[in-house]
Length: 115
Image 1 (cartoon, one colour):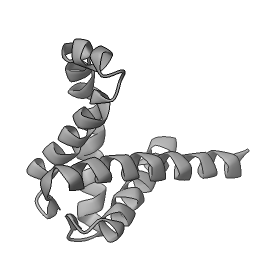
Image 2 (image 1 turned 90 degrees about the horizontal axis):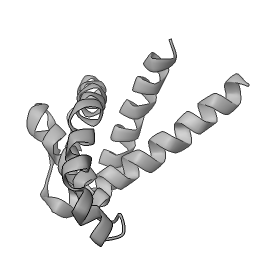
Image 3 (image 1 turned 180 degrees about the horizontal axis):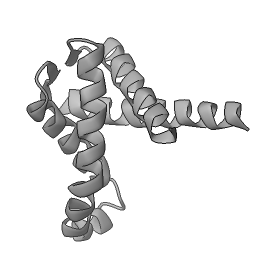
């Protein structure tokens, strides 16, 4: 049950990011839910491999390259999901940061309400 709530909160974070950032376009609630699912799958399976492969670059940039990697994965999600468009590196970077922060806040609020 908890993963369903997290999935819905991540979909809400995607919708909020699409409202705030003009370079991100989501066609509807179902698309936002699909984006949350695909982003979760990408972050579970592809992201750890890419983090490992880019570890030297991340060390040289003191971890800042992870932001670029997250932006790339956010953009990649847009390439896989119809109805979800991310335009440019700026939109992908701002979108990945905003979705992460909003998702983190909403999940923290949810955990606080359950306690």
